[in-house]
Length: 212
Image (tube, rainbow, N blue to C red; front, top):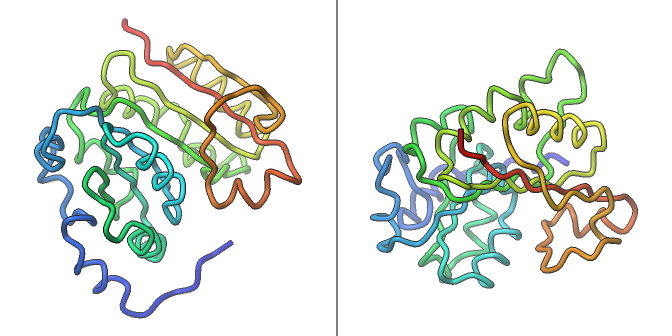
């Protein structure tokens, strides 16, 4: 569902420089300086309205979290959710295509891909965030043993992703074709998942970066 345009959103985001990071490339290789600690950094690509990150940050105060989203209205909604709770959270209003400009090799411990656009048409498969071209970028910024956690409601995209992870040299684990009827503990739900999991299966897996 497309979020309606909110007049003045871009200007409003500028009022939260400690939460919405302008020019994120200036922290390339030094994100721990932004957070003021050396804790591992987890990154969600396509964070939506920020519910997932909000739950994670509450449950794991000794981890740092970044959310990347290219739709400014979504970032604004996340900012509203996080007002007053952002000592270990930051948002990047940016496109994932530029991810190598923002993070140095090995700087990210975990990447979350929650309900990414499946781009179902074959001619659009290079836009899928689990396409090999993107996985090569993730491999650079992930630390040794770093992981990608994927959730989706699209079976074709899930199967495509499993194959892409395997072809890219990732070790697959905790694979489920029906998350909400599995024994997986501690699942944090997104807004989308909360709405649609009662009526459709949710697919999930973890892909661990293996050493050459």
